[in-house]
Length: 322
Ligand code: ADP
View (cartoon, protein in one colour):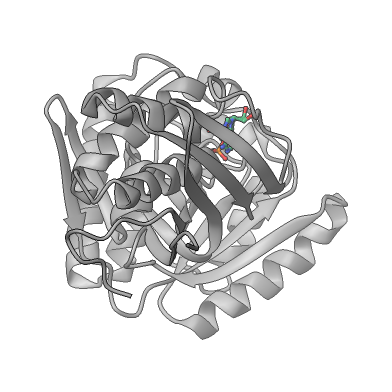
C-alpha cells in the first residue's frame, strides 16, 4: 500500500534485521544485516504524550520501562528533536536473544524509529534515523555506536567511516557471498566483551590492522574471497573475546579447514560467523561446526544467509475503523 502525502495511519508494523558487526579487522566500523532474524515492532499512536512499551514477545527478558528500553528511548529522542508531543505504543517481537552479538538491541532501536517516522509522515530519511537509533545503543552500551544500527536500517555492508560528522559508507556485498552465523545460546554482556579489550595497541599492530581493513574493502569490491578472508584477521578484539566463547578457536579451525573463507566473532559474541562463497559451502560449514559443537552441550541456533539488502522495512500499515 502506498502512502499518499495527506494520509495518516494509526499503526504500522516494521521489521528490522539482526546484524553481524565487527567484521574482523573492521572492529567497531563494519557490519551487515542478515535475513530472517530480527525484531518486528508494531507501533500505534496513543492519546498520551508518552512512548510506552505495551508488549514484548519472543525473548521477553528486556525492560518494559520506557526509560530503559532502547526502542522507546530512541523514539523519545526523535520526538524531542521534532518537538512533538504525540505518544506511541510499541509492541516488540524479538527473534534474537539480547546479548547475542547480533545487534538485538539495535534491531529494536532501528525498528522503533522507522515505525514512528512512518507514522509521522516520514520527516526523516533513513540515514537521518541512524542518529536516533544510535541513542538507543548509547543507553545500553555507553557509546553511540552505529555499526549495528546503520546496517539494520539501511541494509547492505556498511562502513562507519566517521562519527563526527557521522559518515556512513555503503560497500557492495559480493553477489555470491553467504554467511553462516552460529549463535551459542549463552549471553555475553556487551560491557564484559568491551572490558577485555586493551585501550591501547602497538603501532606495528595498528599498521597491520589498517592494512587489513584496506584489504577487506578491496576484497569485498572485487569479490576476492582469499583477500576477504585473510584481511578479516583482527588484532584488536578477537584474541581477547575468543576466550569468553566456549569452543571458539576449535570451531574456527574446523570451519576454515572445511571451506569457509573467513571466520570471526560477531559483535562482542557469543555469536560467530563464517564468510562463504556459496550457499552450499555455508550449509557444509554449518553441518561440520554444528557436529563439533555438540560436545560443548550448549544449545545453539544457526542462520544461513546472504547479506540483507533491504534494511528495516515496513510490513503493514493500519487505519483506524470509523
Ligand atoms: P546485542 O549485542 O544482542 O544487541 P546488547 O548487549 O547490546 O546485546 O544489548 C542487550 C542489553 O540491552 C540487555 O541488557 C537488554 O536488557 C538491553 N535492552 C534494552 N532494551 C532492549 C531491547 N528492546 N532489545 C534488546 N535488548 C534491550
